[in-house]
Amino acid sequence: MTNKVLITGAGTGLGLETALTLAGRGFTVFASVLDAEQQARVASEASQRGVTLNTPIMDVTDEESVQATIDAIVAAPGALLGVVHNAGISLRGYFEDCDDDEIRRVFEVNLIGAMTVTRAVLPTMRAAGLGRLIFVSSIGARVASMGRTAYCASKFALEGFAESLMQEVIPLGIQVSIVEPAIINTERWTVHRGIARRAKDPSSPYLAWFERQEEIADELVRTSPTTPDQVADAIYRALTDGRPQLRYIVGKRARLVVTLRRYLPGELFERFYFGEAMRRVTAADRS
Image: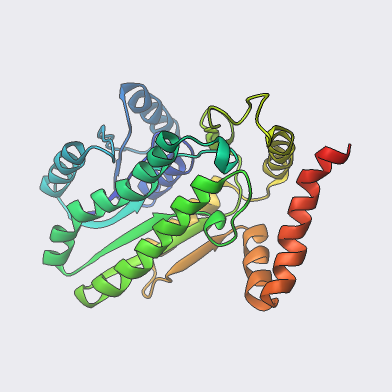
């Protein structure tokens, strides 16, 4: 039987790599994109990799768009094995420099969008008594960082939703997993960086700190050993493991930080990890 998988936000980055990887491993992949331009890019990438992808245009913040896409996927041959909730946007900027509409947009895409897609697929999975819901989160949902207040908050919320959902649907035969990547060099750090409108305002009291934080982030991106295919492999495991984990951490740096937070006393971790991060950023004031 053909196993169908929907991947949201598959026009770029991790979503695109995951779509290509899963298609290469025998899945029928529906890689949702935002527009015809992304459709063309995904088709080109699929051709180069020698795989076939279905590329429905879907906006996770539009309930009608989501329902129409899910209906079409369900009607296609095969069983809907899983949904990879990858669609997401970033917002970089200190909290006071992030406007309410920017923050709401982050939550609408990163959290409410995932909820909307989940609500649309649950009846089918419930009726089949099987299915896997995979939420692409971030190490920023386990250890937050300054200058990413809204983004980290949305990912913390996404993981809370996923944990609660897991307890509700496991008795129905539906599995839930969360994938937590370390920093990875993708379009998220270039064309999709998502800098708040007022983050670089010369009058911002946080400007020097924000600029220093961005320099540090760029260095972490440049030296990151974690790659998109590692995330795709983790998602593949979440789809195929006999007993899937609730969390899959991707990347040595991410595993190290989570391990330190798990085993160090709270005050010690906060003093050294957060303290060092703040010292490096605020050193801009002393230069």
